Length: 466
Image (tube, rainbow, N blue to C red; front, side, top):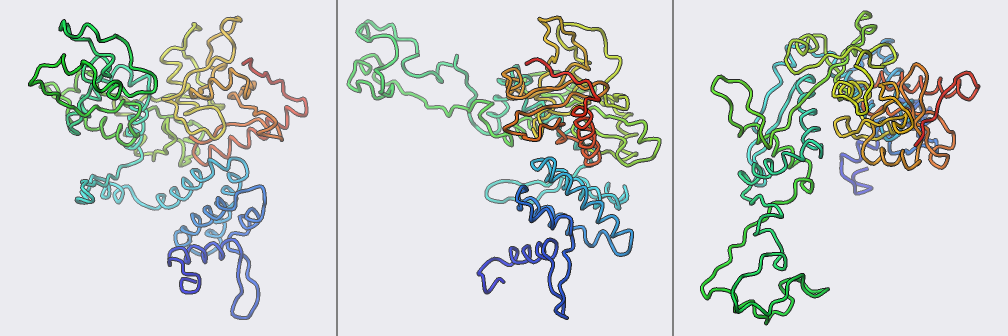
């Protein structure tokens, strides 16, 4: 294939793997052979599903071929992975890639002992490449929960609002860019600067230049030269970009550097709260039923990261980890009295229970979402956990504009009803992006069951007002 089609060897190999998984082949006797993943092969021919997603899923599952081994147990595990992958591809195509990656990661990591994992963690220097010093960081899932929470808070506009200047100062310290605000004289446009008091400048008019002209191009032969000292020199300083305009990767390295460059107290206690320092807060959800059944996914962080039993025990002994106990329907309990605004405890519980925006397939994490009343306060609504959801800025506004509807389900978490043009089947939906694969499948089954009862008139649901 490489020679005939003039394609790279890696692409030719990938096509052969995909053909084996999804199309089958012909054996030495000339007999047709079934594809290795027959259930995904059916989806591959479905015109309603993107074939690129199916091919990508097949490649991921094929990477487990050696890990699965041989025999009936291996065949059963392969069938389970294939069925779960197909369910995600049918229900939430945009989130399917993430869930399938998690399924594969669980299989590959499940056979590694803790000692092997501990031997592999660390920060490794990869050397200088293209002018950068590269590092490779390997951490345990419980440690990555801290990192993800820190990054989410660092990217949160509400958190950064008070720390923007401090973070820009840190950025300037190791990039050489000056941190300047609009109030800084050097960052102003020429027309906005204070005019000199020299009497020779009385003829200069205040205000912006003529429309369509750059401030420096408007009347280049003006009296500006007469207002400057003969030997005056202008120092041009590189202006630092606005914090929100920086790429997320740069914001994260700035936040990381602010931690390294912060001064600590002499007794070794944590640093004083100062500009440029965000805080990382991790919540761990413990499922009592799964713990009793010794299931692997009984402990999950607020960002959807699975913790092993040993990591969960260690986390619960570490300051800053907040264990949150939920009931069987993932509804937070005993979080205080009703008030106009959600309390910190209520917001923490909402973030732990829902982990992100309520809109299906939205990938905005909980730290960047707002608590949204489903019962309008001005119409007598209560600030209760059961009548609240998390929505990102875009989907919070979209719900209040009537672009989709939130549905309150008795004894369950709220669900979402999309408009008919986006969802002709009019199903009740749950965003499973931040769930583990097992939780995502349970949520999809719950949504299907709830939709069936609602259509049959067996369930009294309430559509929240915009």
